[in-house]
Length: 472
Ligand code: SF4
Image 1: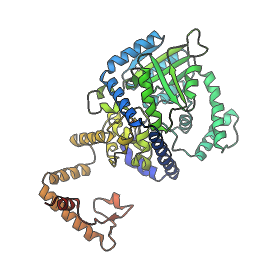
Image 2: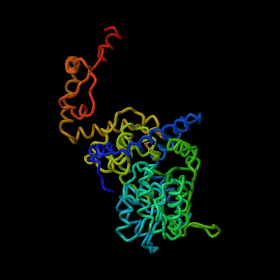
Image 3: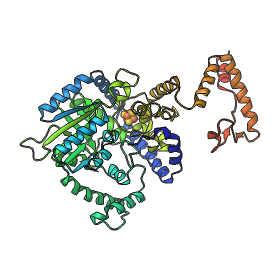
Image 4: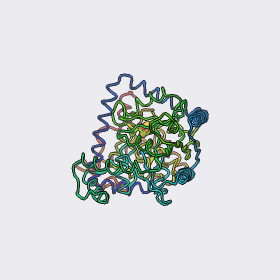
């Protein structure tokens, strides 16, 4: 996938002009946040479960090598194979080799952020293997040739009318020659087209929400059941997962799942939860003949033992973006890579490089909502601050911004000058605002005043109020 994180500002500017996107983001803001709040309120032990989920993930990260090897041993015992891949390239080539070994022409795919991360679809296409997304949202964006804009709702930015046009354009070859506008019928159309693909696919590729060490199982949660058909109808099942997805026991998985769906969509549980353990056994009525797990490191082991380790607790629920005012304003594509929202702003600098993702840690109001709702309590604002400090130390980023921070730092270290400066600035802003109390244009800050007036400061400054309160 092409990285456009460096163009965050341009991407965001374009996104804010897009009326369809504005309407779609409005639905994210209302729907997901209300659903999560209700789900959390209905479960008295929700906060305790969040602590437990955090502790389980921390325990795994402290013992990652042990649990990964334990998981591998159990997969082999169940008749499957594990492929260890350090890089995206290695993972792509491993998957291609498995496809070639079974002479695969088409693969069906369940929703998987890791396959987005490694750019699997384009790669397989370039090698003559046709990938078909089966999650409805992923299918829509595959037809539109776009990346996902949300972790759990990849096509959340698309309107019904846009889906009508996409299906009309791509489904005529299957005999659907009318523009369908009814959402239920649109779903039926996609289902009918995909049914045929499931039964003719040579390989089924899924992600994994969890890798269960004690049983060697992969677990997926979906609301459409497409993952189940993907992994059980094709003769070969490949589960692609990153290394931090391993969880010690089934009991631990059930704890983490109780916070996952509630945080993501406000459901008590996703509609389908499926565990896959090895290939089909003699007395199984269905299932794949071959079972492979492709384990991707992709820079994650470098995060262990660093300030970024806590990011590896992420269970990709999407709650942080659902509650983020910046995501609500600019949408997922603005972040320019696979992971949007606060988790993307914190993770992408590590994945694609801080130079490439320089704007992302600054795309935050630091309101703290992301940390407040994260089911595994990842301190996202702290990690965004870490990246800001890193980029300042390494002298990356726009010069005016760095100079501004240096000037501010100079005064902040000299309190009496700082106080004098803020007092003077407040007076100057009051003078500039005139009778209307609004500043139309601010030198060096045109970006702010180009689309809105700046209200003049009112009343006493914070320091004056503090002095009064403390009586000194
Ligand atoms: S950082 Fe937390 S809230 Fe955001 S996707 Fe990951 S687990 Fe969910």
